[in-house]
Length: 436
Ligand code: GDP
Ligand code: GDP
Image (cartoon, rainbow, N blue to C red; front, side, top):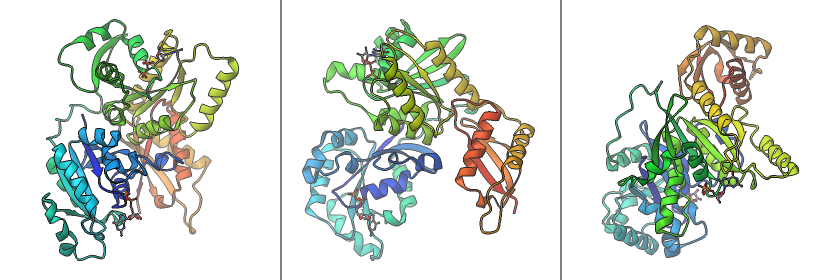
């Protein structure tokens, strides 16, 4: 499982700014989504190549201050689940009583803490942090999150706190087992779907003693193919036994997404596409995973209602034309074959070898049909393409003046490649390389 790092501190010290600096997406597709990447509290960040889940606890309880903030259930939960807490203070304001309160709570919890002095811009470094020595938390990492200063060095220090990374799985490019994660909001029908897919086997998998990990991976064979099914619903099922309060853990969902090759995002047709669904979707896209959208609870809906749901999906999901939407009823077992076919198509699309000659042919044809717009009297020329990686397919496009190519043209090429190679269920990433 990915390590979890929580950003904690009193209001206004710059927690969200730091969170954004550490998670800012490089994926233009996601960055463009209105309302999705704003107000996010969970994200994937990286120490070198190594992923971790970052939580902005300030965003979890906006409005709450002081001790109210720290005792809020979600903050409590995030801190408890963390491998490390980044305790942010403001060098500009110096040590405050509220900082001391936060420090005391963290001490009681006994989690590892790394002190981060933010807003060091324009201040004398040593003076800036001297104030915080009395917290007894060691030397503060100095950053100016708003200017992204000190951020890389901070991540270097974060690395020292993390357990050693799990060894790389061999042949990551073409794994034999298809890793499939089932994610979605509470009550959309994830458990029902997992039960439906696995049938009796599931019972055995879950009754095994010693399965205390939070997300469960079930090995599953179907039609001669081997899957690792990463089940976040099982978490809830077991948690229910101990605890009547339902916990929706975005952390678990993120961990599952990160591990998967293909994600089934389960929606409840009766409720349409909610903000929480969109947030989960944005995480899948950001990680470049394969995606199949399962529109569950399709049974018993009136025709009018069905049409309304499909219209909504068309409207809100037009930026992921390649993601198949499969209407299912996990309860009655309808749509299961189509769902599984969509999953396999996504996996095969994401791992397919796309030959250089065919890629170049498609590129040249696309370029001749529609040239990129001129920018400051210059226009790009595109010459050839080859594969730069799989899962998701990465297509390296060589040409001249490629820095002038706008996002809209990148989209056009992505969609052209997807159509030409009949890819389904996977995004395509284009890397432009300039010969000049
Ligand atoms: P949060 O409440 O802890 O999440 O704090 P925010 O991230 O919302 O930041 C609070 C204020 O501090 C905002 O006005 C930020 O622009 C400002 N801020 C954040 N980081 C820096 C920094 O590195 N330097 C300066 N001067 N201001 C910062
Ligand atoms: P989870 O929280 O996502 O794991 O959701 P569950 O699998 O526990 O399902 C939540 C509720 O929705 C339960 O009452 C299920 O019986 C119901 N449900 C799940 N799938 C369907 C479906 O396809 N159709 C209908 N009508 N109800 C469903």
